[in-house]
Length: 161
Image 1: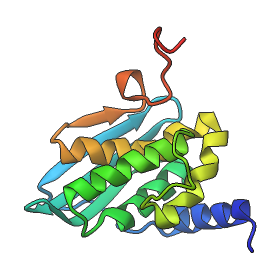
Image 2 (image 1 turned 45 degrees about the vertical axis):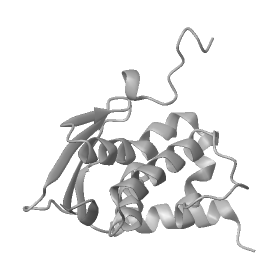
Image 3 (image 1 turned 180 degrees about the vertical axis):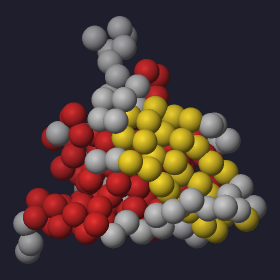
């Protein structure tokens, strides 16, 4: 069986070099801009929704390889899905990358599970989840999202301490 780390690196590099669904959608019905102040990533996600189905999805921006690859793979994963299915996938992806998902339990992540190892690299988690935060914001007609403040799943509050 192939080394999961080598597969992860290969997929990250491939989606960084040739991102899928890269480009703005002129006829977008939903849009949001995401920003990761720590890394400097900026991602804009646009959607064309037909009822509750994501008919088209695209992204543009300047981002590190992890963020750009996560955005590319995200667009492939959610295209053609219902908003409810996309929201479930957002939850699973964020839970996986923050180490809160039992990977032995049933999930819908498919190829996205190559990002499971990111949980061991806390400083890179925000890079991987930014596109997902931005997709969530777009689905809910929120103009922008960030990996900081209350939208950061790695944030420790006083009740967590």
